[in-house]
Image (cartoon, rainbow, N blue to C red; front, side, top):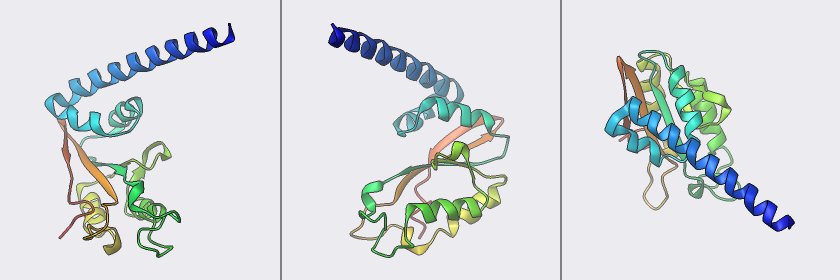
Length: 160
């Protein structure tokens, strides 16, 4: 009997979660049109994503980061150096003017395009694409100029 109750509760929760996810995907499509597919692929709670986007002011670029934890060793280091960690990259983004929305370390809003550019342009060398190592993250950039736009931002950790 207890097992049946657990299964019923699990089905209800799953159904509710799927409905909510579909609702937020629909909202993303309304905001971004065909570009919303890029956001659907990001592994971030869609309600957080929609809420975060609604906080954006015009001309505030947002960096969306999907960290690749596989690029770091068990000590959370990129290359054995204890300072080369995701935590230090997050601190770098914050110190460069990126407001960490909801402290989830995945969406960072900048006050100006220049702040965004300076942050991305000067990521530490150890975080850049390195032959033989996985990339540290996949990134998107969201901008709001009368309409919302999103695009892959491969340069964030792969600047030449």
